[in-house]
Amino acid sequence: MSNVAGFWIRLGARLLDALLVGMVIGTIVFLFQMNTESQTTQVIEGVGGILYYVLLPAFVYGYTVAKRLLNIRIVKMDGSDVGLGTMVLREVLTGLIYGLTFGIAIIISMFMIGLRKDKRAIHDLIAGTYVTYDKPQHWK
Image 1 (cartoon, one colour):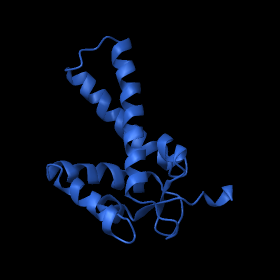
Image 2 (cartoon, rainbow, N blue to C red):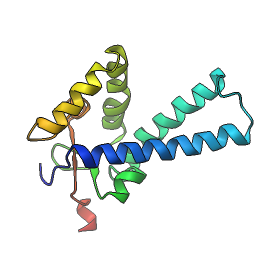
Image 3 (cartoon, rainbow, N blue to C red):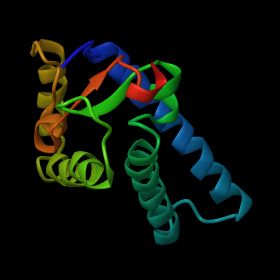
């Protein structure tokens, strides 16, 4: 592990990504004049979030839009690029865990990022990942 990204940069990236995803989904809902309380809208929000947070890093060297802007990315413990399976574990499985614990696990994860030397949260431990400032190998 090298050049580990800490709490504030990761929080900033997550907030920027959430804002971006929210704006895109909000625009889709507005353009199609959907009822924001409908189940269809909720499905679009859920699927859109999963597609963004799972597929984008899996195919773009561990980057989301905000992580790229802030020069951080998700990598496997050996420093290699994350794949689809890794991102499903990191985002979907741990999302279920966070939901089942009513958000308590999210708070624990925030403390883990802030206090652990390796800055790894629950989702990082489950998926075998960490967040780094290192560029992809072929970009160096």
